[in-house]
Image (cartoon, rainbow, N blue to C red; front, side, top):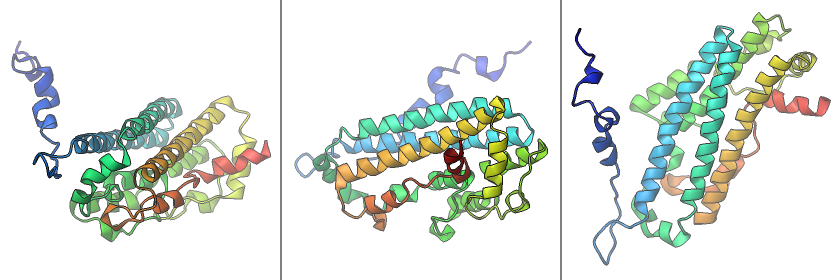
Length: 270
């Protein structure tokens, strides 16, 4: 019996993870006037943001799977993977602690070299917003090529919230027609009738647990946004962001805006 390719002698930890290629992806653009070398802190800045993009990729991977599990009425499996996403969100927030070890002066030493590059341009984060139901903060024409194709596909797809309410409908919940058949290209908004339906079933512990976990996800995203805003304010104050963005002022406008507003609105009714 022949061994699978993975069992060959040249299949190692390094080759499996493409470590050589991974470690070659940090290309600094800054130049220190005195040494001619890149500014010391740019490497940290690049690595932190590359890791964020990897986490965004994993979160999108999980969200797609969670949606598929809800579509198959496998709520327990969906919750298991929601728990994983929550752990990743906490890790993403924790990375900001590392980034905040960089002082404003250290960031300023290479900031001008970033030119038009900005985290505002992260297509994967925009995909994440779309997957969760936030579809009104960007113009799709800002993104082209493969990024634009991915975002356009996400824009047209039902969201995690749509999968959740479809599950409720299949389970016999009284889901309003306008919620069940809403235009999935629009941002999720509150619906008082749906809130009443959710409240009426909250005594079911399994259902309540799923709702609370979705609320945890929403809160985790808001926590990340808040820490991100404060990090930007701490680093550049009220300066405009790179790439022509409004910096902290734009980010601050995204705070305290839940992606699942119905799950927050019902809190006052218990």
